[in-house]
Length: 178
Image 1 (tube, rainbow, N blue to C red):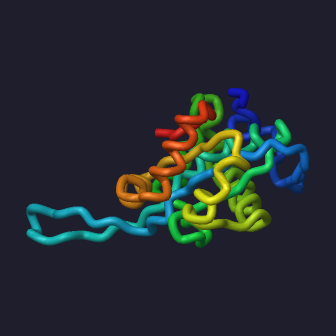
Image 2: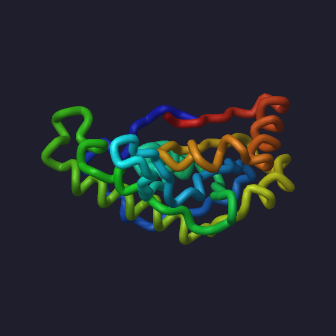
Image 3: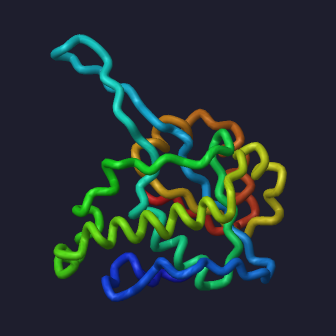
């Protein structure tokens, strides 16, 4: 689908422009975690601590922009069909400061990238993994951004397993990022 790093690494680029939805028959499924929190056992306190989670914008923005610019339709899917939560741990400036020449613009870039991704999701809506699994022949490929959330809802997801199995068997490109 192309490897260009587009606007997320170009501080001169304005990604707040409207997102066009080109009707050309090319469609990609973007699977995003539906997890919103996870628990970690604190051995010193002898108890579990709950942390917020979600998906990392930085791991979705470049591939999303490339797909849209290349004319792909994009369907977003989560385990429950609800709008996914951004993992605030992945929204800090340090994730947007590479290469180092962008360090001064990092927080602005993080905010712009978040706006771009959230606009795309709201504009297109979200379906459940079960719904996506019923339409697998419509997709030319699949991508799933990371964050901490996927560690908690991806491993035991039967619909995601069916989607991945289909993509593999059909030889369709599949990207699981970080």
